[in-house]
Image (cartoon, rainbow, N blue to C red; front, side, top):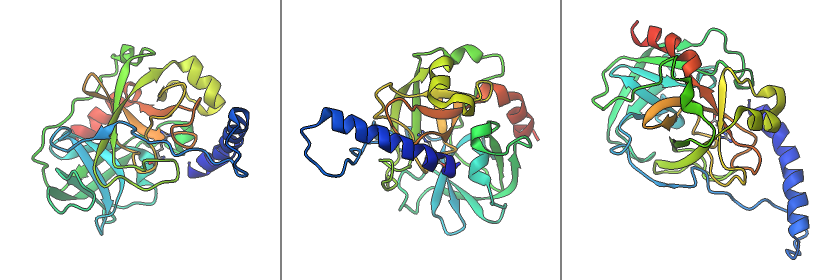
Length: 263
Ligand code: ARG
């Protein structure tokens, strides 16, 4: 996953360098892509997004996002759970700031990773965590398997997370959110070729880039009409022109998630 990101980043860096050279007048000897604000939108709070969970290690360091879909169930990305055990992760709700100490911390009693998952670039990037204690926060509803129409190209979707605010930058201490348009399957296929698995993924972002999820946002929600419709999964770098963010197409996994939520 990060290997894929890195490989593509090299190509992207070359393209960015070429673009910078074309734009010229910069006179710089080293072409460095300008920092692009991720989740380029605005700061927000867990009061505004009460179902937005931090997934942390046992020491409280956030590394992924998750969405509370019932008092004890959190939807996240399978790739976030690579190498993790129930003892190594915690879920934190009601905490807007990474350096906060407020909110509710829960241990995890079970980690369900989609059994078909191998790598984010192959799809199947969904996991459900079962919490040991209930989260006293409003849950998000998620798409049903029949709601495939929500991904119409151009539809406005909302992304939320604490991830890095530029491609190789730092995480945001405060929760951030932005809106991005859903990208058509054909367009996403042109960006990513066979790594774009249409049945399992959906892309969102502007053609010109500039607004995107980034490292640390994974596992968090892509909301359409306020309903959980995608999970932050992967991308070529972050906010690069021509390379939208790739999200798990939740309609495909909705029944699997429901089975876990009800288990
Ligand atoms: N894989 C990243 C994570 O684990 C998320 C990357 C999203 N990238 C993007 N360009 N939208 O946090």
